[in-house]
Length: 429
Image (cartoon, rainbow, N blue to C red; front, side, top):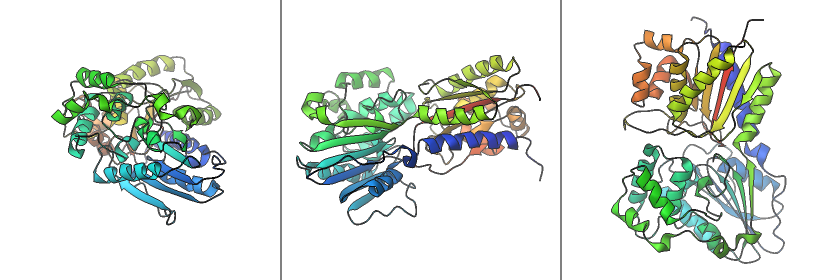
């Protein structure tokens, strides 16, 4: 077998990605002690792609008995995901909710409603929770929620915009779980996958007060031309579906704490790259744009920075968007970013890149993302692949799969959204 000339750079970039993921793992991020519940009982709900390790760490650090619920995506349980008889475990659908998502939301609401003033609800929240727990508003069916979710995901709307609509179609999101907990103390610890880390958008914020309105949701639907079922259209006009105000939630004494975020992942990767002799350009963790356009923009930046001959690492995070024009296409935002970047670089020497979702799943595929090298387009054309056409028709997964340049990690059990690194070799030593 012919040696892979890109192997050293491939390994270096994957190592940086691994370091980024470890930095935002539940083991690294969870506080040393759980909040005290002096006279009552503690209920813990772990919801999202990081739910399993968050619950595991919480139980290990708990000083008393706990009842609770773990809700995570199919395939995110491991061989150690047994928590005893007092903790229910539900796997459900993502990115589109399913009947198990209904079960999860209803179970969580029952747990919260049973709490008294002397009790505490600890919500361990991570990205993915919007789909994993779904309790549609009155008159809205699961099929309606599935339809509007699919339309929103294909529209090019940002995750905050998508979650704004979701919150106004729910009996669970937008602070309603905290409302159900009534007089109990509510604490929320969050691994954030939202650019800017606004806790009112992570997993559609079951316990955090909402600042958006039904009008905001209607404006988003109109702006992106999202087709919604009649029941959804009616629900977005119904004042009963306005999210509760902060005062009505009684959240003045509730603690909301971001325990891990994208900047933590970027900092860990930057530190490791700097130790290897790279000059770091950290573009931050709030980048939001159409994936292919951001890739093209970063190609121009990489070319400019490469001109001084220094070894450089351009690191960035955030969450890009994809406007789907081909419903049969396969791929995700990180692969579309990479394809846009490769086309923009056009084989520029000494530049390679990785883009992956920190949860291990780019969109709905089995890959976290992929990698590109100076020979990416040459190898693709030798296989008869047209990079521009694959990008135009949302077939980036097939493109990188044919090249053997997908990055497949399996579920990482955390989620702070996208991680991107561009390495520039610089002059030879």
